[in-house]
Image (cartoon, rainbow, N blue to C red; front, side, top):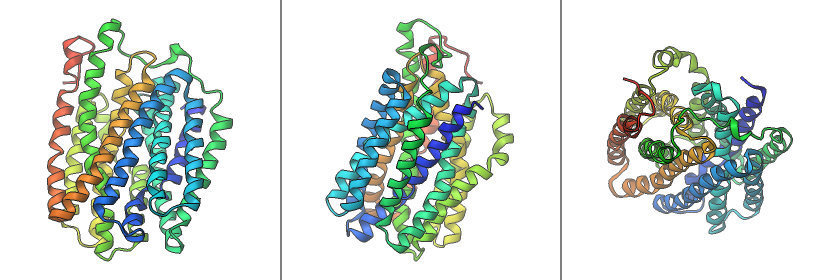
Amino acid sequence: MPKQVWLLIIGMFINVMGNSFLWPLNTIYMHDYLGKSLSVAGLVLMANSAAGVVGNLLGGYLFDKIGGYKSILTGIVISSLSLLALVFWHGWPHYVWLLTILGFSGGIIFPSMYAMVGTLWADGGRKAFNAIYLAQNVGVAIGPALAGIVASINIHFIFSANLFFYLLFFLLAFFGYRKMEIAPDRHTSIIKEKKRIQNKAPFYALLIITSGYLITWLVYSQWITTISTHTLSLGISLPQYSLLWTVNGLLIVLGQPLIKPVIKLLEDKIKSQMLVGIFIFAISFIVVAFAETFTMFIVAMVILTFAEMFVWPAIPTIADQLAPKGRSGFYQGFVNSTATVGRMIGPVAGGVLADQYGMQLMLFLLTGLLIIPVITTFLYDRPLKKNHFYEPES
């Protein structure tokens, strides 16, 4: 693994650990401390995610135009200023505006991080994106556990903690990423066909696979929105809920040897990796629908974690393979934006369904939607077959 990739991994870890003080507690803060309904909280998170979609697309565009260093610093500076304001103004409606700005600025950062690791370690393939994914989840393992402790003292301290980690991230990026600019001929491209076709078939394939990715995130987002408040209503404490995310992060790191034989078996069959993950996703949400104790939520989280270990690294890998030369930033930005759209729609859909029909029926209905990513996984490479880009897996 190149040394520069390690700097990206450390940066992603710091970024996600800081953000983990805020995102797991957003719904709880608005519902329990600001007195808003789940539906209203869902709308606020929808605004946050909508801004994130714009930020992701802009971040990908900036990577291709001005490079990862400048685009990442832009996102960090805007986020830091927003968090500084949030430290002093975290009531209603200031929380709405500042959380929306955070969604936008955070969105700028992620596609550049993914595009940079793909271009700096072009031979890494899935390993490159899995490394960034692992860094995210080490942050998730540590951040929510610390957030639960901090919030139990004073929930308002979570904003200062997030700001502190963004300042650390700024120092690392400012001094460490300056020499990471990618030469134009280093952009990853395994599809070397006519430009006219490049602009169509790979992007059509990206549209298909990311439409299923959107649905998967829509369902997954319930864990940080409706399920979070549901656990508290069952008598599970805030530190216990935060511990669920610690289990998630630790298991993703410690569970790599457990899934390695399966990944090796399916190394050149990325469709199969996706389908295995989606099937496990469905099982985890069925368990959640019947969970009433902290132990059952731990079991559901363990199952969910194994599901995402198959699915999440696969999508940016596919996008990296599809990206024409000089377009890796845009393709990674598009992937991140579709995930963000899923996180945008998910809280609203889940909140409304939970308010109207109850948690169990909501979970069953959303779990049924996972048939869509199964279909898109089967179909995404059809445009590539038609234009003879490569021979897909059998």
